Length: 202
Ligand SMILES: N[C@@H](CCC(=O)N[C@@H](CS)C(=O)NCC(=O)O)C(=O)O
Image (cartoon, rainbow, N blue to C red; front, top):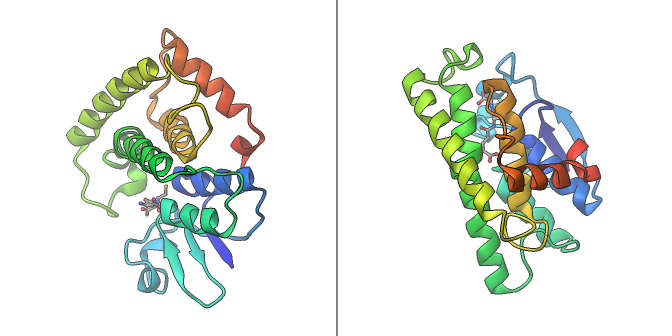
C-alpha cells in the first residue's frame, strides 16, 4: 500500500501522526498540491474530492478521508488503541474527533482557504466567511481550554485521534496567525504534552 501525502498540509499530518503512534511504516508518495496535481486527472478520477491524503491499497482501491484511513489502520492493528476500546468509548472518541474536526481544524483551515492565493481559482473564495471562521476558531479554542481543565486529553484520560485532529488544526493556525492565547493555561499545557510526543514530528 502507499500513502499519497503532502508534507505541509494538516490532513496528511493527521494520518502520519496516527501511523507513528502505532509504529506502522507505509510507503509514501508526495503529491504536488502546489502545482494542483490533486485537482486534475488522473488524481480526481480516483478521488473526486481532490484532497490529500489518500491511501492506495494493494488491490488498487483508493481510500480517501483522513479519518477513514485512520479507521483502516485501527482495524488492521488495534494497539495502541486510538479510537476507543468499548462501544461507548468509540462513540465518545468519535464525538470529540468530530468536534475537533468541524470546530477547530475546519474553521482554521477555512480561514486560510477563503483568502489565501494558494486557493485562488481552486475554490470559490469568500474572504468575509474566512474571517467569520477565524472568529469561531478563536472562540472554540477558548472553549477547548475550559474542557481541558477537567481532563488530560481531548476525549478523556487517554491520547486519541481527537488529540491528533486538534493538534494538526491548531498548528496549522500559524499560516493565518491564529495562536493559542497564553492565558489559556490548560490548552497550553495540553499542546506542550502532545507536541512532545515523538509522533508529533511525523
Ligand atoms: N476531508 C478530507 C480533507 C482533505 C483536504 O482538504 N486536504 C487538503 C490538505 S490538508 C488538500 O488536499 N488541499 C489542497 C487542495 O484542496 O487543492 C480529509 O479528511 O482527508
